[in-house]
Image 1 (cartoon, rainbow, N blue to C red):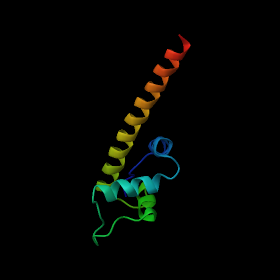
Image 2 (image 1 turned 60 degrees about the horizontal axis):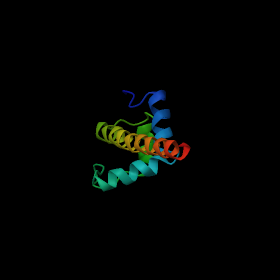
Image 3 (image 1 turned 90 degrees about the horizontal axis):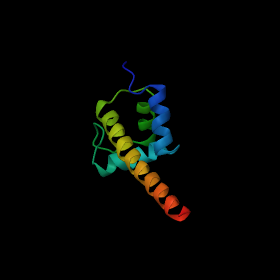
Length: 91
């Protein structure tokens, strides 16, 4: 079975999404209406199996990367805004 995520990628995703990453991914998949073969939303346990390379699912892996990139951009934007605010207070 092919590895979905490297250890480095797993750590980066956990850092960005938080240690409750499975619930964040679950919410994203429900919002995007992505379901398993039985037309039921993926469970948090199933998401953890995919995330930890114990089960393969290309669609879920792609969606996890999309969520990671979206969340990372939002966090970077917030950090930049905070830096700008700090600079304005120093003046």
